[in-house]
Image 1: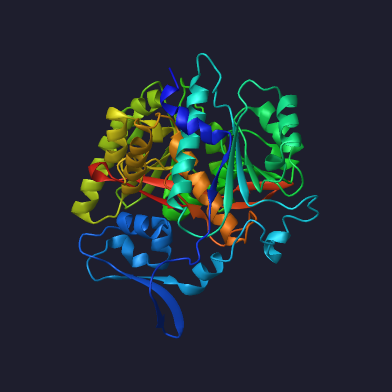
Image 2: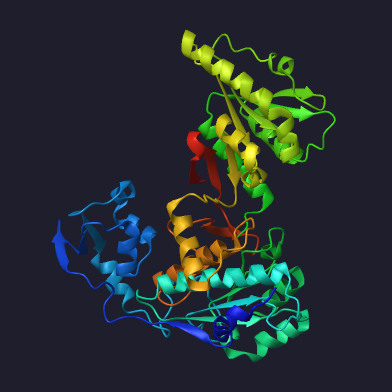
Length: 478
């Protein structure tokens, strides 16, 4: 492995990128609609949402936020509008902007003013003779972040992006770096690494008013004791709560059926135990079907369906090996019940609810998810065939001459989503970062919606993903 093609890119790591404000927010005409002023853009022949996004220098999400009907497509002559006040206010942003009253609640007692800046401290391995996969993933994250910065560079708000390679540094060396580097110790947000010791060192050293965003370590609990820490990976118990909330809402009137392999690992019993507790609280007793090694048809025949009963099936193991032990029989039973219900109008139904692990399935297992119409909960949504995912992949290849490294989540897309979220947040809060948002941020792969938990903040949103016929996916933020 070599980083030779990235030498020019690496020069940026020793400096920073300026996202400079313009004299205007959008270079568009203005019209008054129902007493309010709007910038407006008239769609030209052949223009796509992506093309308009690039032309105006704003994201597709921002276009859809003001023009939700555009999600169904745009055509020649369509008018896209953008609130004049919002973009004009943004034009006043600068690095010296004072915090708003709302943001000030989270930046009380700052020792020094925060810069409108985002620092990335990751193990890039720039000096390693044999860079590791961890180094490569960190670099992909950074590359995705740069693409996000470029996509927002034409909108207003002066923000610095600072990067430092902490590969091989001891926790004390990381502390010394932050303490001695003015750009780091006055940053609005520091994005930390997966390594727990280095992440702890950053959180302990970052001054009051600088938030430490953890998007890479899924198990870290620094947020419980440190008011500076933002845990982007929804903690497990909180994820269980959100998942069961979605399950009960989406399958209202369905009785849960838990598949339990008496000879298996049943590595999701913590989730099924929580699920049982929640259903019992509302007076519903889940059914448990226990099978030996492989599910057989007779196991499923225990479920009565003649009177139109509806069931949602949840296995107690999320591995692909276990999925293969029950999925074929479950699909046959589900198809038979569906055909019979269509014939007699009974309304009987069998649905399937599963785990984040399933999003990594490929080949026959992935095809089976679509045949089952399965729904899963996950911290991430990887729709590789979606428009946004294809667009970022094309941009990545155009910029760097290579594809993003395959990972879960995709590190390059994670960098893109994270930087998009942070830049928009800092601009919306006049040059400072605030964990408080009116609506969850939903990117290509990640969603962010921070709430207070312990001393710090945790992300409070996950994806509910449904596998549809024809290889398609649908997802919503829960």
